[in-house]
Image 1: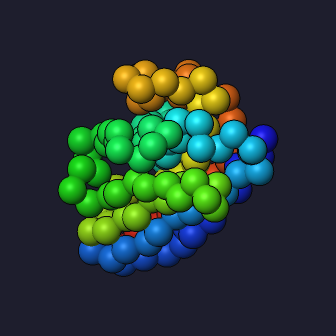
Image 2: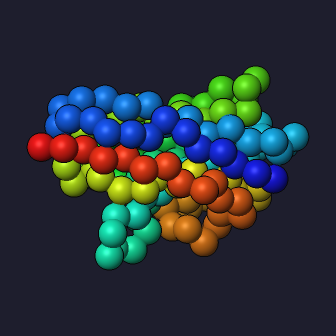
Amino acid sequence: VQLQASGGGLAQAGGSLRLSCTTSGRAFSTYGLGWFRQAPGKEREFVAAIGWSGSSTSYTDSVKGRFTISRLNAKNTVYLQMNGLKPEDTAVYFCAADKNYYYGKGMMTPGPYDYWGQGTQVTVSS
């Protein structure tokens, strides 16, 4: 299973970007999906996750109210809409998929995820 992330780039503080991640996996609709980010010199951190139906979502506190994760199973795609961007959002963003997802499963750490995309750079200028 390959994940391909796109949509990163340069934005000004207060601006918006939308990240997309597509996969070739046939069982995409059963995967739990997540976005993580890693800034230079820092550990990879959880950003957002979504269950297979799209009704269950979770976010790290620093992005709540600004970022929205969603998925379109018909297109094997997960999105991360990022509004109100801040310079501290600057990082490489990675999408990830958990093939063994079930409702209520913890998804806020990298461990459960089986597949990872290559990352897309997001840079926010002040």
